[in-house]
Amino acid sequence: MGCLVLNYTTQIYFDGETGLGADWPQGYKRERRPLITVLDRLIMRDLIKTLLAVLTVIVVIIVSRRFIKILDKAIEGQVSNETLLSILGLKMVVASISFLPAALFMAVLMVLGRMYRDQEMSSIASAGGGAGTIYRAVFLLVFPLSVVSAGLSLYVAPWAEAKTEEIMHQDEQSADIRGVAAGKFSEYSQGDLVFYVEKIGDDKKMHKVFVQQRQLNGKLATINSEAGRLAELEGGRYMILEHGERILGMPGALDYVIENFVEYAVRIEERSSVINTSREAVAMDVLWNSEVIRDVAELQRRYSIPLSMIFLSFLAVPLAQSAPRGGVYGNMTIAFLIYFSYGNLIRVSQSWVINETIPVWLGGIGVYWILALVGVGLLIKLYGWQWVMMKLREKVAR
Image (cartoon, rainbow, N blue to C red; front, side, top):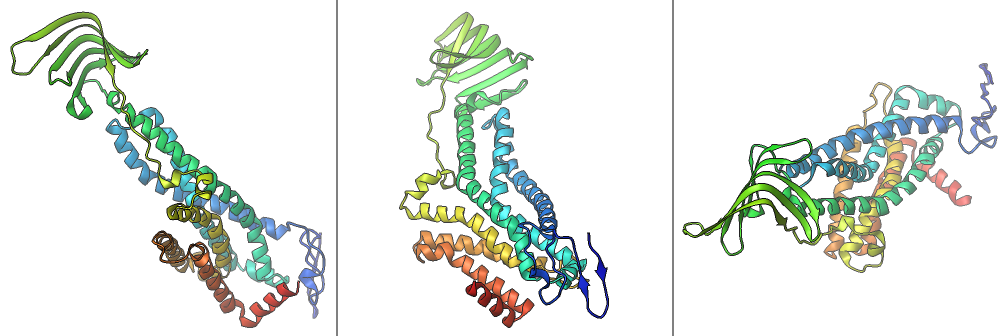
């Protein structure tokens, strides 16, 4: 493995997997390192664990608040109980994609902040590692994750939004026959249709059914039957009533038609409506070929998710530095203010693009130039201006 020898000339040896050299003049960069070192795996593993934990908490909180509104619709009969779990799953997919940059930003701050507190950063620095070492480990995870998030944001999130709207639209079309519960009156079609069921069996068959339906000509039909059931027949969906009586007439008049029946079918008309597709549910190829300014702004919003992951992670590395006794969350308040400002700038920039206040290209990259400048400013504060210029000259020389 290796040994640690301390004398007047410090020499540090680690196993070959870390790639750290023995002599300080060459030190960390003397030998060629593998693609992913032990330190890289350590930081990446902590980042993944923290990212999943933070993302889970955020998604549960956000989806729970949104799901309450869907539960209200389910109670009113506008959404079926069978589709609740499907809608919940789709909402979780959309929320996970939307809040992935925030969760990654917090994960980087928490992991690196803990490393500063536990003096692990001092150990890395004493072995010849600097900011480039940390950036390397962080972006070995961030770059692949941003590519995946680009696919999720551009294709998966719109599909989930469109699927949710389709499910809710189908439920709204059949809302008039949903929510019939035993022991209570259920009113539908703006009061033109009223149901009362005394009992519903395990086989979904209704017993002691009362139906009141207002006809188009103003007459009122009142039906009492021993049993009833829903059935899909040719021409649509019907409620089939068994062994009952039907009374039809004009309220206040004396002429009524009274009929006894063994089986009577009432056709339930489905609502005819068009799906109002939101811009978040529009397919990627439609936005890409569109010249409508709102579609362009929506496309920029979708691209903002992978871009924000890269630039926020770049900013989080110097921001994570904290005093040894400052705690893991020493700079979390500043990070929250930065992310809050970034979110507002994204929304304001999108609004300005729609209103043609700023050019489209500026709305697409302006916010990220600000993040980059803030990140460079934090690096200058942390390492000094000369260090930043030296690193830039090294990159240009390559």
